[in-house]
Amino acid sequence: MQTRLSKFVKNEPEYRDLETILRSCVHCGFCNATCPTYQLLGDELDGPRGRIYLLKQMLVGYPVSALAQRHLDRCLSCRSCESTCPSGVRYGRLLDLGRVMVESRVRRPWLDRARRSLMLRVFPHARRFALFMRLGWLLRPLLPRAVQRKLPERQERQSWPEARHGRKMLIFRGCVQESLRPAIDFTAARILQDLGISLLRVKSTGCCGALNYHLSDHERALAFARSNIDACWPYVEQGAEAIVMTASGCGLMVKEYAQLLRHDRHYAQKAARLSAMAKDISEILAGEDLSCFSRARTASVVFQSPCTLQHGQKLSDVVEALLEKAGYQLTSVADAHLCCGSAGVYALLQPDLAGRLLQDKLQALQAGEPDIIATANIGCLNHLQSASPVAVKHWLELLP
Ligand code: SF4
Ligand code: SF4
Image 1 (cartoon, rainbow, N blue to C red):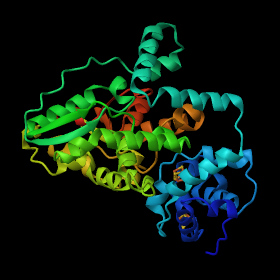
Image 2 (image 1 turned 90 degrees about the vertical axis):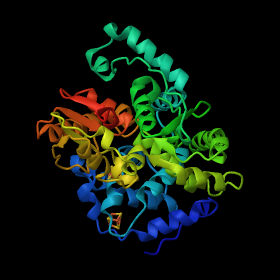
Image 3 (image 1 turned 180 degrees about the vertical axis):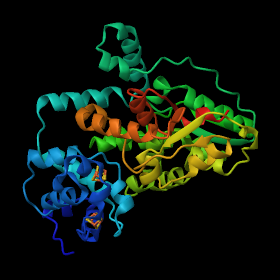
Image 4 (image 1 turned 90 degrees about the horizontal axis):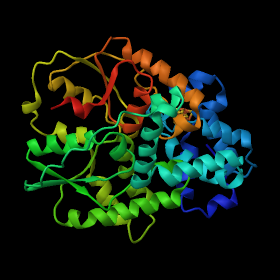
């Protein structure tokens, strides 16, 4: 499809990407059928085809309106449309690049700016977030019930297993997961220890950068990426086998470091190496002998596959197979491709839509009357847990 991009875009390093993506869309509209926001709102501009149209209008030089920004804000970045698109349109990439340009052209109301700025100042920073959570737990009895439900129970930290094996893998310190659910990474370390692999937590690593990237703060997102690469590099040179990701959202981001830093002459090669080494923990465990975790179990489980796992990393049915091997009976879930509404900070920025998606998702998950809901991303876990009568866990917590 012929597209003449405006002069201001031609100076962008990502110009070729934008042009290729826009040209690959044939406007068939198949993607609308699997778009959660289109299904909820029924407005063409709240579906992928309409959003591509809005972004294209801007990129060929038309002014951008606050209305267009609102339709783009409602997008979950879930990439369900990418899984459906027969033309292979990389919508997520287009959205990430386009949103930055929209951001520089449309000034948000001050309250929205303040809210976003606060999130960026707290959530990606482990220490600040830990302080924020401690304050939340302290004030819990005084908080409204709706907020109380969103605060998870406090978990005690366990001691990290000693690194005694020849096989070594790395894990980032991360940002919010360490406070919200420290048991996930400790469980990963214990499971790998039992399999003869030492999991080293690289202290000077931090947030993967996904939150900043998706809130159009690309500069700081890439700064996080570079800092993580620097922190891991000595271990990579010493022969670490993999970077283990226990949150699928972060895993997707690290797998994309290669693409995001490919124009950086100092970091491009290292980023490519780190991305190639980044593996979701399910990919690692699928290649190991897990017979020591296999036993007869009575609990039934339903797995909520996060969008970042199934649409982003294209890892479908891997966790489900591991849970079945471990002895769990899995119940099925209708419309498994649809987002639960968590989507990073989407649930905070778009609470009404996120709440509707959450109710639909919980209904679908509970249809088979499972004892446990399992997932693979801390954001989804917290979001589902805030309204679920059934226990919600990271699937790793079910293995030992
Ligand atoms: S993104 Fe893909 S599915 Fe959607 S309208 Fe374009 S070509 Fe069709
Ligand atoms: S990323 Fe998700 S919400 Fe956004 S347009 Fe695609 S399917 Fe719809």
